[in-house]
Every structure is written in C-alpha cells, then in structure tokens.
Length: 155
Image (cartoon, rainbow, N blue to C red; front, side):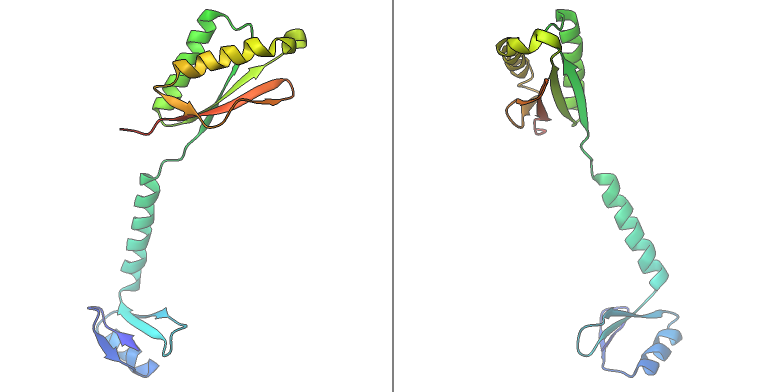
C-alpha cells in the first residue's frame, strides 16, 4: 500500500514501481507500518522528516522543567539569624519550582530533645505554608529527621 506526499492513496503497488514513482518526484519511499497487511509505505522527503522530528523533540525538551531537590540542614540549636537565612533560601528554592529536603541533624545528647525539634520543624512548616507544603510527615532516620517540601502550584 503506497501513500503519496499529499496523503492520497496510490493503492497496492509493487516495490519497484513505488520506488520509481518516488524517484520521479525527487522523494524517498519510507515504510511507515511494516506489520500491516499489506505493509504501508509513504512517499516523502525523509531528510526533512527527520529534521522536523528532531526539532519537535528539542522543543519538547526545552518546554519541560526538571524538578531538582535542594537540601537544607538544621540543628536543634540553630540560631535565629541562621534560621532566617536558611528559611530565605528555602523560599527562593520553592519559588524557582524546586523541592526542598529539610533535615534536622542531631549530635550527641541533642537526640533526647526530639519534642523541641518537632516543634521547631512544625514552626518552619507554618512559616513556609504560602510557598510550599510538605509531601510527607517528618521521618526519623537514625540521627536525622527529614521531610520534603514541594512548591505550591503556580496560580
């Protein structure tokens, strides 16, 4: 089955006849559906077709946005100035559309004050509410408490 460059069917032709027609028009004969019965071939400019496919793929890749995960670490004794500085970075990352992984790291006996750390993190989540929301509850992993904050959808 042969289809010409305008999309009109030329019918079922011998392979040599189809190639001759394509060469007369200065185009290529391309097999489009080899599993169909009879196989479907199209007369087209194959170089131009490949160029347009590459152009579409490049445009689709440029339009897509990959989300990166940035990590910010706190400690239970993080000073107020450091807290504000890190919070500003978190807000910047969320506004850029990136996710932020927040870690609370414990050293030595700090691990005994888990309740203060959870209060600290819940306060941080409240302050970040307008920029992003946590994907999950804070999870304890050894001497770390971690959770991920995802940016809010653009309005």
